[in-house]
Figure 1 (cartoon, rainbow, N blue to C red):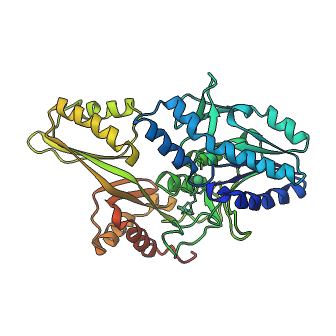
Figure 2 (figure 1 turned 180 degrees about the vertical axis):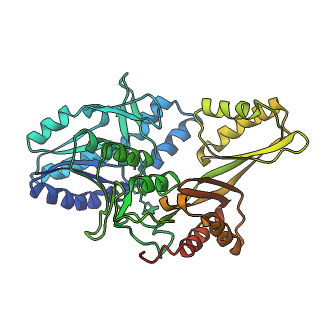
Figure 3 (figure 1 turned 90 degrees about the vertical axis):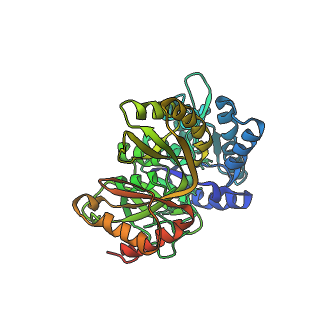
Length: 406
Ligand code: ADP
Ligand code: ASP
Ligand code: MG
């Protein structure tokens, strides 16, 4: 008998009909004799609706109340699923984050799970119940409800699998696995049977939203076997696991994109020690993450500094940067909210040259201008105009031959 965690995303539980459909996947595991913990997201679009409501109530909603509000979508789905299961004669019990005691830090909107109390869940499993846990939410030491960042139900599922030492964690979604790129924008994308934690993490960080980056970090740390599967079919599936010898160290294994990017340029800044610190410290003090940064070569003691932030932080970031730019004597601040980041990922890149050149040439051949570049051992990212995202992803996927099985 195994212990399995099954997580269903928003499109999988978008309405009662779909909730009744996931029941089939759950009872199949139960009938096979396994203990089952189900983690659910809110119905598709519900978290967005709640966020919009919060912002219609106030331009900058109180963070404690905001998290309590946006966590409610999951309360609806877990209770509905438990009601359906109970009505079919299965013993099922729903739990919210605070009822389990999914303990997090105090960082509202992006809390990290510190500890999970497994006692209440184990007690129910022992009684033969299917345990249904609300994803995306936790509770801090002062009993405030916290949320784990967008897509956080993946992390709830993997964290529960780690805490309860589950045999595996199945992430059911609207695609049947992890692909070489988003199959919804590139019809030549190829499903991978297996992917290493490191590559999956880099893909998730650079925008492949099929798994939240923190869920992959956690899976790697606790060696949780994660299967990404389709809610709507029994075909396919991708195992996210440790790198092994059957996984080739591909030079390039995937292409990702992130449309949630905005670019800020501080023009004609004095090029002297302390200026970058003065510009970036107030952003980090306000919890605004800066992604890529480039600084031009200095000309007569002045330079331009360009960086990217998440689109949702642009307004606040712009306000902060305009104030500091003035204080440090910069000429002006320019913003561009029509950009995207495309990235080429591969663990084998570290030992091969020429990947960057091929990426730049491929984009140039399509007339796509590269505004910013950043590289790491296993990734190259370029910021481009957002309208070229699909084109860039498709031509890069072709150029690196990802369609064919290697
Ligand atoms: P859920 O609501 O189930 O959590 P998400 O929308 O968060 O689902 O994640 C699934 C989506 O991730 C897919 O519909 C797909 O468009 C997108 N995606 C992006 N990159 C990839 C990739 N490389 N492989 C598979 N799906 C991807
Ligand atoms: N409902 C949350 C969101 O939309 C969490 C999740 O879906 O994983 O971000
Ligand atoms: Mg998701």
